[in-house]
Amino acid sequence: MAMTLRRIVVILLAAAAALTAQNRRSVFVITDAEGVAGVCRQEQTEPTNTEMQRLLTGEVNAAVRGFLAAGAEEVVVWDGHDGSRTLSALTLHPRARLIHGSLGPTMLMERGFAALAFVGQHARANRAGAVMAHSYSSLGIQRLLMNGKEVGEIETRAALAGWFGVPVILLTGDQAAAEDLKAIVPNAELAVVKESFGYYACMSMSAEAAQQTIEKAAARAWSRLGEIKPYKVEGPVTIEVEYTTRSTLFPLAALPPGVERVDARTLRYRGKDFLEAWTRWQTR
Ligand SMILES: [Zn+2]
Image 1 (cartoon, rainbow, N blue to C red):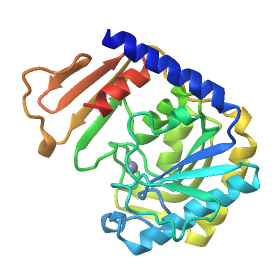
Image 2: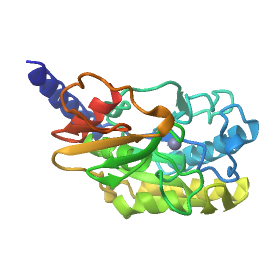
Image 3: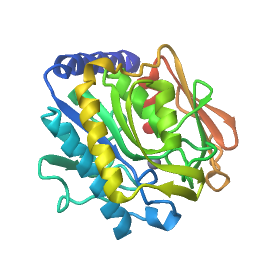
Image 4: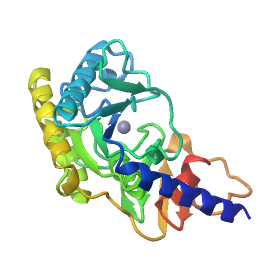
């Protein structure tokens, strides 16, 4: 009975997404801090770090200008870094909207956005030559695997958007993050604003140059919207979360359906498709 209801909900979400997708000319922007030009040290990623806030806001507003100039009607910006405490409506582009807070498993994708974009994005955990690369939580998660392959926010959020038929059209970040997106969405627009040499070592563009680069890339991305395909992960999906030693799991007597223990620090979530496996992790 529960499964039947879940299926109905999933079908309804898909139908709603399909209905609204053609009607909306709206971009959903996910922000982060570790991929911003000029951000290369851990303390800069504190949500209250004013230098990082200014650098990130500059890049976000540059992307908004680019999207709007190319014909997007709405840009919705989600403050995606560390507890949604970095961006402010005071300094946001006047024609953008800002979302604070966690969004649940679907990240509002059922609203039928035309496209998804990453601003300030870093690469996945365990990636060589990448600035502050991690997958969701550098303190909590050692590695994240989707169908046995190491992934991070880029791959999983692209897959989530892809489930709803939404393509990722733009990523701004270091060259490692850009390569990660290119591997799954070969023709997405990439604005590489810094080159990473190691976890805390990079060569960055100036804020001014990064913003100009991002504005142009966002405009190109919107104008090429029809050419860029959603990233769809077909068939049954497993998501394996290897926690860090400090986050070692309490040995539970029983795990919910679709969840299995791999070892003391690792859980595997199974689903008939990406959304089911993803929802099982996100709602555990
Ligand atoms: Zn992140």
